[in-house]
Image (cartoon, rainbow, N blue to C red; front, side):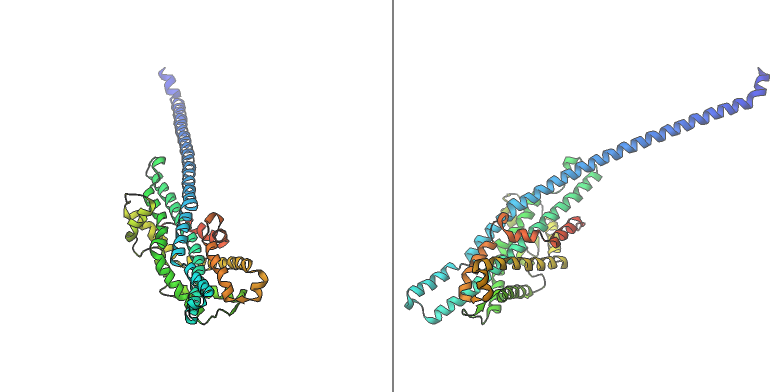
Length: 369
């Protein structure tokens, strides 16, 4: 036995070494295979989680978009329409002029001239203001929706990173969400009187010297409308239009926005203020200015088509007296403030490729911290 061991011990050692190395390699391979399998399962779970999160984000974002399209914008437009009708009432002016026509001695020549001049300015003011407000509101509410959707995505990703349950990953407070959307009422609740005054000033300046017998054709009317818009936008400081849509300090509007949303308990101000600051940053950007400018010019072109329809294509092309044009322009303001689901001005602006690209980039950008 001893001789056998002495003669074969090297082979035994080699055999045990080979067997041990093989067993060690097998254990290493098996462990590596198990780790790969675990990693594959983890990656599969992560993919399923990401798909579920994307689905939840998509559903919530679509709900926000639906609320904005079906509730927020229609409510704001109806409220704005009634307030403009109330503050830029043309009925009493036309009524007095009709009375003066039926009863010639009831008005002096100077009073008639003054009434016609006031009617001229208020009719253009109401029409151009309605065009601007409709365009701006549709863009502003879409800015709000994209900011909310972008926050929802970021907050959900953060929630996943901190192992929060998926049904708890939406960190956007619903009260803040409603309050932010309800802040679109600021224009009608607070900013409208100053907006009307600014547009009236711009209109008076542009129409100065225009007589009721002056002939307005398609080109003259188109240029007059654009000049009123340019004059309005050039008044005051850069981005002065922001003051019509939101206060300089968003906490000043907390109570009003909460009231508009129907909530009795105001939500914490910090999140709402952050959303408002982001909206202000978007609206004051040069990119938004370009989008607003393109949108207004597109809306003016569409409005000219409708006015030509109201006046008759040939009539407006040849030109008609301003006095006969005013009733058509007064009617246009009601069309401009029509229900969003039947308002082609809103649809035309929303469908512009430049507008679509702007909001695609806005949604993809990172929120301010």
